[in-house]
Length: 176
Image 1 (cartoon, rainbow, N blue to C red):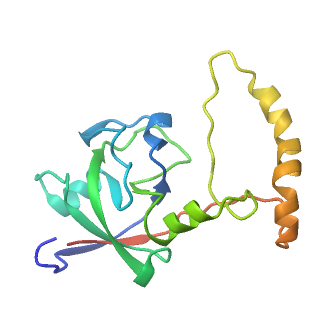
Image 2: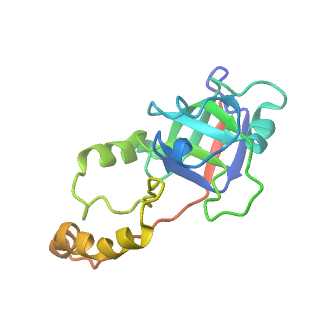
């Protein structure tokens, strides 16, 4: 951020809200920052190398500020401090994140911290890493009973059916 003036504006697709353990579960090569520290605080973001190059050229992105627009932010936008730059994976994946914002930022962070029921806080994709030798099929067989016992009553009370969905949206980012 230089004097609070927007220096560059780009519409960047494929931004994701993730918690601080995302980079433990999914491996990315960090060019700047470290996976264990990158998203521990609200208002932090890890960006792909293409975004870093677009906004900052050959300069370090670490500690720089990006303003990101999204409906979950009060006033429609929020400033994020860059805490990591990752190399974009070459292998195909259903997770196509080009930048990763701390899940505990802005209004979405307040929602996550205060909505503790599974029925009210079920809009996020959840991934599990099983221990070596664990029986994935046995765990999968237990999930319907878990949902029926712990999620369905709360969903039904709210007038919803059993379904979990997520969406990724285009979020404009502004270099400040």
